Image (cartoon, rainbow, N blue to C red; front, side, top):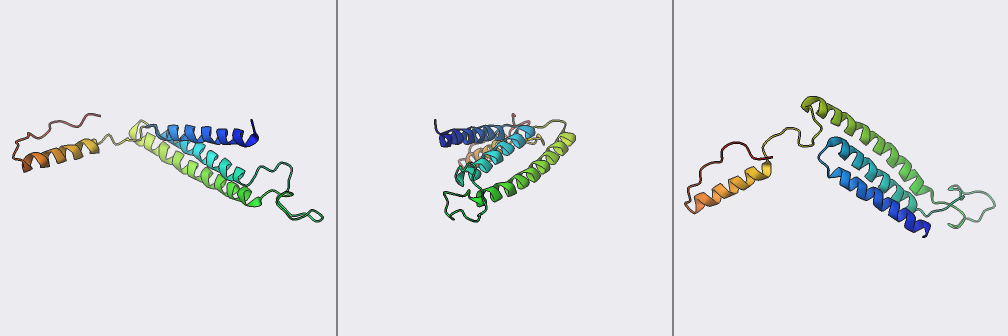
Length: 146
């Protein structure tokens, strides 16, 4: 198995795990999923600059100036910047998640516990259609099921 295939599988597993956690209904899982996705993107950007082991990203005297002798410094700079940005993003998301937990007492994403918007929209459409065709439909009682 080549190193490129191993790296591709690793980035794919990180991305898939991040997307799975991002789709969960708890805030901590979402923060962890976004962190894994940012790791996967950072690795992807880093490895797009070629895997060059033992090669300097800075031009040295006496070494020919071609890509065979150097590593590309641009992906390294981009990844370093992305690491700082993702750290700040994670800190802000954790602060928002802790505040949401403190206010609501749980860490579900749909923390307000309000009515189900899709059910209300479907009820409104059904009522509009029923009145258009002259059908008498009683209004729904209670709140929408969760």
